Image (cartoon, rainbow, N blue to C red):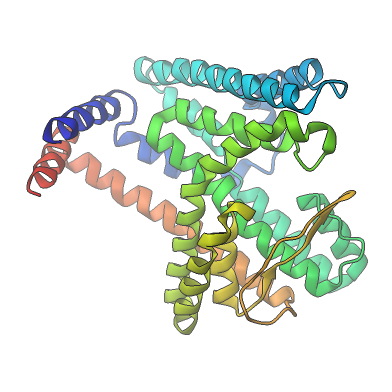
Length: 358
């Protein structure tokens, strides 16, 4: 066992010293700032879209070529697995090249910060939530249309309270999929980790299993995406509960309890933990049946609070997302300062000594 930990720490020491030095934490902090300032501009998204566009065109080509409705379900699922493996290898290749460029080209981190900024959705999530809050204030019809554009849900028969609850669930999912997961996989494996996550994130939406035509072909990519998001879904729940402890202390235990109760329902979707955390923190009943165009999913209700959510609950959930972003930014800064003052060799030597002490 000791030899295993020695090999593992040696690998990560070499990995972080060459690719993910403490300077990369400064890059992540910068990426958050760039996202908040610039990512509403079309110029930045167009400038940094090229690597992602390769993945999008590849996914689209694979679906057009292999997702043949005349084939059997088993053949479509088999082709979907092959496509998922190919996308994984392609993302690894692109990510490895970018990791190499990051290691050998001075100031490549500036380009990296721009790409990471375009890969996270902090600014877009805040904008979408603000649009929905304003729409809820104006009319039910406008709120329905805004929600449909945001999440693709069929909102035709929704009341205002249903739209508000759906908006909170959207924020819960996005915290995991659009903020924590891309940042986390960059920390774990640099651009390689970010691209592997990004390709399955794109595939899960482009190969929409809610569409009967794509259901069998896209199931492998969608399930892989859900597995990749799962640890960050749990982290999102912890962050939401932690923020509730600071800002709404009386709701902390409810947030913790209801989120943990959803562990048995994880098969209903990766977002049950953060949705449960919001349900407890806001005193709401979330979840329930979800409808998209010509397709409904009969999911369980989450929480035992009120069903009557409003724009104030949505504002509170949005404030939690903003606080989570600030928390991540501060955490990256602190860790970057510590990493700068403590050489990486000393850090891993101390870590190995701590592990071996057990």
